[in-house]
Length: 185
Image 1 (cartoon, rainbow, N blue to C red):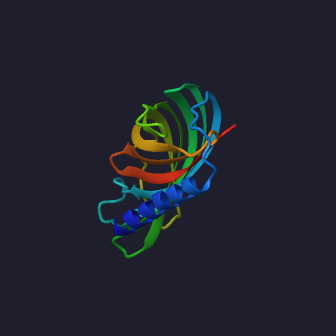
Image 2 (image 1 turned 30 degrees about the horizontal axis):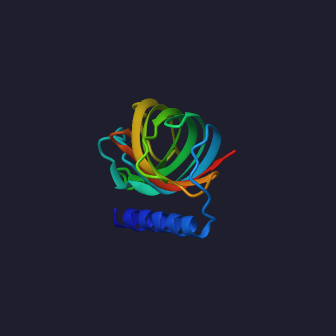
Image 3 (image 1 turned 135 degrees about the horizontal axis):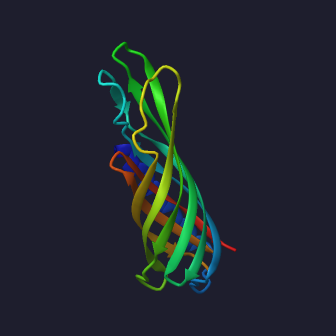
């Protein structure tokens, strides 16, 4: 978890540095399409490995790509794909393996204005989970689709570029803390 705090702090700091160096146009929340990319840390804790298995590592680096549409100044919808990395598991026989996690889904967003350049991000959506593993590890996927929620903060750098940091919970054993940029078309 300590590495999660370090990476998140570095991502937030880099976003603030970039925001200060980019030309400071007037803040602008236009309706229309946007695309984004995030990096972060995920926590994935498989619950359906065999009883004699043990989860050795439940966090990994992750990335997320998204495409969204802002309908009104405070309402948007986003589609996304996220690769959350893998959990490392060891069987009772001592065999190590990984269970990979990736998600795709859609979410509705409410973005309340916090200040001239900052908006909050509250999201609720639906995600489809896809697990995979080598033949070394036996597991059973419990849920392949989930409702999920998330919260975050978006900083408007200029009329096209914003920096967003967010925390999303896809299931009680799947969480993502990420930061990245959105580009408006």
